[in-house]
Length: 361
Image (cartoon, rainbow, N blue to C red; front, side):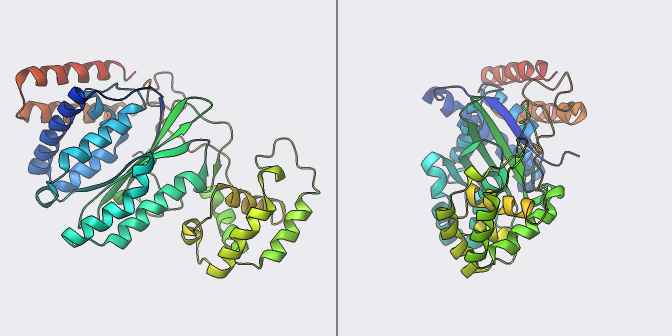
């Protein structure tokens, strides 16, 4: 079973034209309603969380099978397809791209007021998953898209995407409630990526467990003490291979967040991440202290564990799980055969799926 999921995809400009998006929305609605009828609501979330199915689904709907825009457009199509049907489907979708992603808490509250959902828990999940993928994992990809799919029963999926400005690639992060045993240790559903980064601060790795504990302890100490130790570090001659430099730390800004964490006294790594104002630079500062002063090193290995966009036919960075891949394609074929859509649209969907299948490697 795949345990994590990140997909690297080339950035494509523009947006889906209205005629295409409207068709994507209608087809997405038919497919999802049929899955709910045949397999239940939970199966929809399980499928959306699966990066292979998600990619194949985007192809069926009519979008480029390997572009970054697939994530944005498919998520948007699902959200629009299910809008107004929440009472019938039991599925709620919040979030979006850019500024819309920051409206996620407000959307969850709206659902809560209308349907009696526990807004507080889902808002926490939304914020925490975003903090993990931008602060606990620092891989060079800036998050710009965030969606959360959830049910009254507490099941949820988070799909978010980040962009690397220099490489012009996007990376997608999948989360699924059924797979999460810890939000801060190996938490993702699966990992797909064609590009393995050389240096990634990965505080979610098992190897980072001690470093996570030390950073929490450090965050609870008096700021004056930590600032003195930061000054000591500034006199060190760090080796060129070191991943975090003293120049990455702004002592003035660091002091502000230390006052906050000292007053909050976060009890664990989750609470530290959720501390308002605690971002990537503060994390790097605490990690540097942990590593240099207390000898607790984090993992700097990219958590990517699966090659997706080109199928990984050369086994780089990891080989394809063909059995799972094929099972997802067959599931979509079965659903399409059962879906009440025009034969012409169905034929086009099958054609797009066959193109996607031929590119799996």
